[in-house]
Length: 291
Image (cartoon, rainbow, N blue to C red; front, side, top):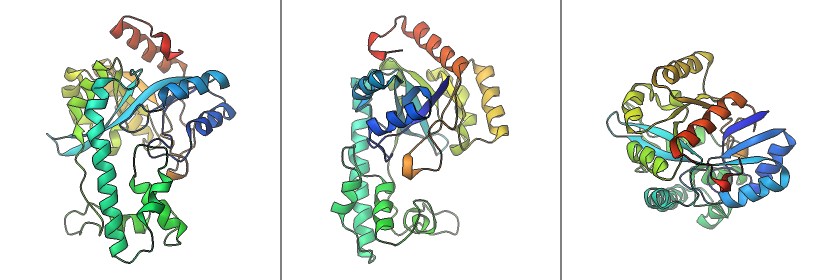
């Protein structure tokens, strides 16, 4: 069985519609797919219906864009088996979605002022049907105008780099305030889900795991395109130490990413343990999950 527990649709920062995404999963032989769009569960019920028609089990998920204010670094928290559109998720994430869209508008205006011949209306079209504009949508407009041939490259750094010691920030960089990682974990638990630390190597979140376990963190993403073998081993170490569920997935974004859907298989053993943990924590089988 092929199980991919991390992917994104056009509802956030992917390029495929829900139908296109699930149809592709079917073609690739994926039997279980978690749709984990950023900061929203919009479209989950529709995805489950499509999955039922195509014979792909859809796991309702989310990936919350969070921040570790103690260590001053970002952190992404995956939520599996969350109740779609739950009040706890909406209350936490709706302001972030609104702010991200506003920041994207302001960044686009800065880029236009620098002489790049794009318009906000052109950028918005790439985000149609989603929750708002991301930097990837801005880059897509710039690609179509011939300014670059890739999403993440020199132009992306020139525009959006956060800067650092001796390095100036990008000409369109505007900081976005993410939600507190502890609140993200609690919101997922309140929404009936399993909170899992996504790609811990990317933001170097390993030293925060002990603290977050106390808040209700239940899993860690071991298999991910950014994880080298030694990163997987370190994630497994923390999983064993804190009795965390191991997960894995491709983090597929379509044209906006480098990985292929299904390229990272979580495996049936990990999925069954995730399912077992869900049922043990919440004491029921949600009939709406189609699991």
